[in-house]
Image 1 (tube, rainbow, N blue to C red):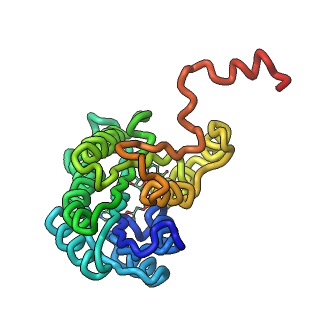
Image 2: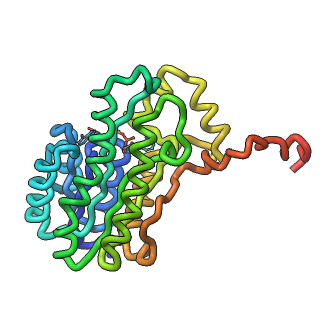
Image 3: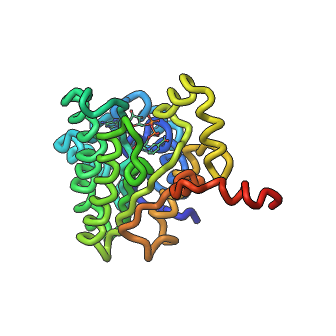
Length: 260
Ligand SMILES: NC(=O)c1ccc[n+]([C@@H]2O[C@H](COP(=O)([O-])OP(=O)(O)OC[C@H]3O[C@@H](n4cnc5c(N)ncnc54)[C@H](O)[C@@H]3O)[C@@H](O)[C@H]2O)c1
């Protein structure tokens, strides 16, 4: 028996990367999955692969999200899980950022998560309870230069998660995951344009590698499952330890005590 046997689940951004891996893992664990993505063909491909349902929807459009979640609940025979994972990024100095770009990132990364919670809560309640997981980022707690709207939107996802956990317990648990550097379409340019960057990430990560989408997907499945029945309102970091560096004195210990 799978960890999510018989449960109906919506995964946004399910057509690629972390979302696609999550759709696959949820299906392996017995869930019936609705793959939501802006990219209709990508959603179709993943849905076909896992025997799920595909929905072409923009998470930032609250009206379209409501309609799609309502339709998914019918097609899946009920809904007890939503994974608000769709996201987008940008890289620019704040004073050079176009207001439209600011709006675009906040609309997808923050409004999109709220739209998912808003649309799914009545269905999850009707199913007798369940779980909401949203994809934040280590950028939300450890922002980098150039990521203003991205890091602010991801910090907001963690805050929204905490508020929702307070509003919807005990029947609905609400958590976030904060991936570190994961190899997906979103991060491909990092490695393409700065080949030395991979080695830097590997060196800075105690687990000694860049992450794979499945590393995050497994944590999402855990959070949605009964294994996490006493976990709510949390923002779980899945970064192989990348963000443990922070004091500015890391590597000093190894220089003082080289033989260990
Ligand atoms: N890859 C990483 O290192 C990393 C790190 C931290 C957080 N994240 C977050 O993980 C999530 C998934 O990213 P990924 O790395 O798998 O990227 P990805 O580009 O591989 O996948 C993102 C998917 O979301 C879809 N999408 C984008 N905008 C959408 C919208 N408005 N409505 C519906 N679907 C939309 C895309 O079409 C795509 O299929 C994002 O929220 C991202 O911010 C990724």
